[in-house]
Image 1: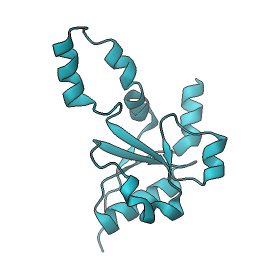
Image 2: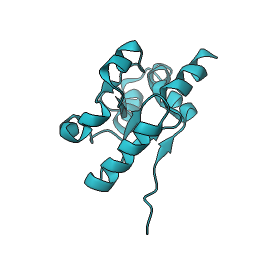
Image 3: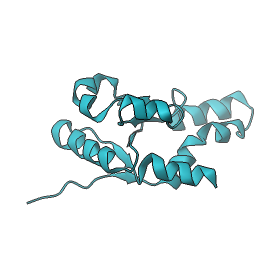
Image 4: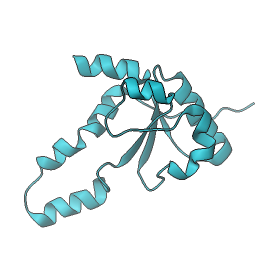
Amino acid sequence: MFCIMLKKITIKKFLDLENLEEIIEKLPRTPYDRAEWLKTENTNKHSFQLIDVREPYEYEDGHIKNSINIPMGDILESLDKLDQSKKSIILYCRTGRKSASVAYMLNKLHKISVYSLEEGYKKYLKVIAK
C-alpha cells in the first residue's frame, strides 16, 4: 500500500497570495523593476487559479473573490478549465473535505498537481472577519 501526499494550503498562506495585488501596488514605480517582478512572480493577474468545487447554489450564496465554480461532480469533464499555466491551482469547498478528495483524484487519475484549502470556505470567512 502506498499513499499520495495531499498538498494543502493554509488560510494564512492563501490570504498572502490573495493580497498579491496590494503587494504589486507597493513596488517601485520604475517600469523595469515592476515588469521584472511581474514576469517572475505574477502573470495574468494571479499566479494561482482558485476553484470552488461546491454546487452552484452554494457558490451563489458566497464565494472567494476571483474563484470559478466547477462542482465536484463535473470536475473530470471540465479539465480544460484548469489553468495549468498558473503556479498553483487551489481547490476549496465549505470544510475542505470535498476539495481534498478532488485534489487527490486529480493527482491520482491525471497527475495534475493541485492544493486543497485547509478547512475550506467556512474557515476563510472566520479568518477574514477578524
